[in-house]
Image (cartoon, helix red, strand yellow):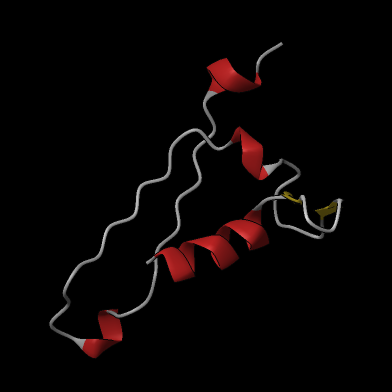
Length: 67
């Protein structure tokens, strides 16, 4: 699951590449991945192959973005 999480997060949020000393942009949200304070991954068995895939939910905590 960790092999799936990183590319998804890199697509959604800006991320800092310390080795290249640059910030990776062109993402879906104008926010840095350093602002992520909780990540929940869950793997489920599905009976129907049509149900395979991923669901991604992004939730903003107003307490974290205020001010």
